[in-house]
Image 1 (cartoon, helix red, strand yellow):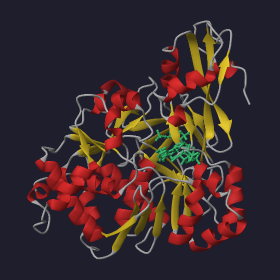
Image 2 (cartoon, helix red, strand yellow; image 1 turned 30 degrees about the vertical axis):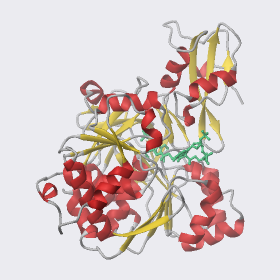
Image 3 (tube, protein in one colour; image 1 turned 90 degrees about the vertical axis):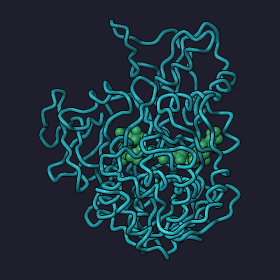
Image 4 (cartoon, helix red, strand yellow; image 1 turned 180 degrees about the vertical axis):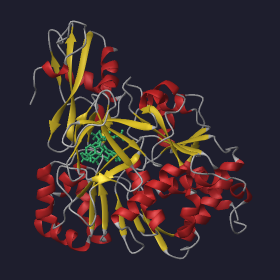
Length: 496
Ligand code: MLC
Ligand code: AMP
């Protein structure tokens, strides 16, 4: 399987078709045909090659959504380079971990973010790369550096960092085959076609935006509108001006869309054919409210950074609220008990998945990789149940992962930062329900002195992404522990 061969059908085969409207930070919109994206990425490949990047090297980006991420991505597909997306909300401490682990040749970023990078790693300013690429006179066709590289399904294409149980995130090694198979499955299952118009408000540093939106678009040859980030106050204007037929969002985006007035919702619904939700559970009442307001039954699907998409409600069949549907065409799902034996329908167990979409393991973490796989099956850590008619419902997670607005938070990482603060002796972070973001973190602290929440928050803000900041701090005399000393988070007092 060749991802590039798949993309060639649009980049070369539909070269004259308008492919993309990309918003810039200053709110101007630039349009590109597939042919222009093809030649831009060839120039980027030449520029990166001239700067010494070779097959198997890592190249990170720390950028808000912009067309240059597409240029960089396609250039890396052609060169066999491994892309390392970095969350733009991360602070230097979080960035340093990823850069230290992935050891990229450079980080492509903007001048404002250079100060957030660890010393020693070159920062390549996106503006410089754009200028160098523009200066190249394309010789026609693909440059020789591209032709020299043959990538197959097993060639690594991206290290996407995802929180580990240790608190430090691990790089899931996603291959050309992961992205190609994911796009083929989604497009076949969701009826993506060249006439579609896809609005992408998702960040491109996560697989929901990068794997699903970008590749559904490139493989189907449809039209994409890419905005710098989701902004509820601008959503109505985007929908009205662009009239997307397809929208992919996290549940928080649907909660926000439900704040729009009834006439706007009806208008948006009238020109759309499909709304997809994923990355976190979609509450049943949001599913129902959206159907009433927009006239569409949201299609919920389930995926992970390590696997891209696994399970989806059907496009043509019943989209059952509260379930994630049926395994996607190239994915096999088992639901197993603690000893790895299949459970009967109607019985809860851990979801194990297998398919060409699944990552090759964790970057330089053979132990974590060995733990994550069992006989070729990826152990998702998600608990679910299969109904007699095959529909799968997710019921929870084996780990303490908190998902807020579709962003993952590992309590351990916040606890570690809290324990570094003077006077804090013990810390336990848990997720509490939140109507907009799904869950938000709350910190329970055993401290020598009363907690100055504002000061503590200001300190944390310099070290952690904004979505990881505890919503509140609760001072307790002691953390409830088992006889063996393990914190029993379910026994902590509830906060509203
Ligand atoms: C959020 N913020 C951003 C941002 N997204 N800042 C810059 N770029 C972005 N892309 C910041 C805001 O500045 C603000 O920070 C805070 O987050 C909340 O923003 P908000 O405007 O109040 O947004 P809200 O309406 O709450 O919506 C949040 C959101 C965001 C939905 C836009 O949570 C989001 O983009 N989520 C998508 C996450 C995602 O793509 N997950 C996929 C993971 S892959 P401050 O400092 O002012 O508080 C995966 C696999 C799978 O899970 O199955 O898909
Ligand atoms: P990430 O590590 O960011 O890729 O997050 C993956 C996790 O998000 C999965 O393991 C699930 O726990 C969760 N997830 C993704 N999609 C859904 C969904 N539709 N419903 C519930 N949880 C989901």
